[in-house]
Image 1 (spheres, rainbow, N blue to C red):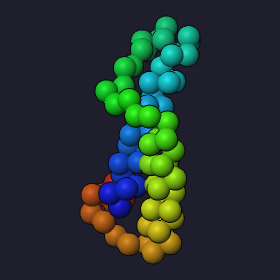
Image 2: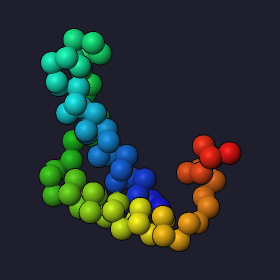
Image 3: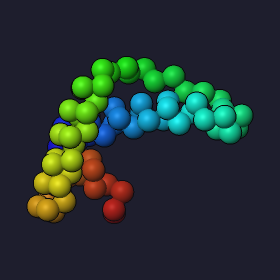
Image 4: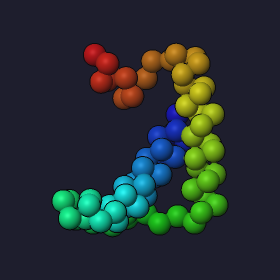
Length: 72
C-alpha cells in the first residue's frame, strides 16, 4: 500500500507540473512548480511498482480506512 500511495502521489505531482506548462492552463491558472524532482529511472520504478500494488489491492478487495473513507 505504501508503494502505491508514494508512487502515484509523486508521479501525480510531477504530472501536474508538466500539465501546468500548457499555454491555456498557464493563462487560466498559472504555473505549478513541483517540490519533487526525481530522476527518470526512479519515476519509472515507482510507476512500475505502483501498478502491481494497485492490482493487488483491487484483486484482494481489502478495506483500508484511509483509502476507503470516501466511500462512506
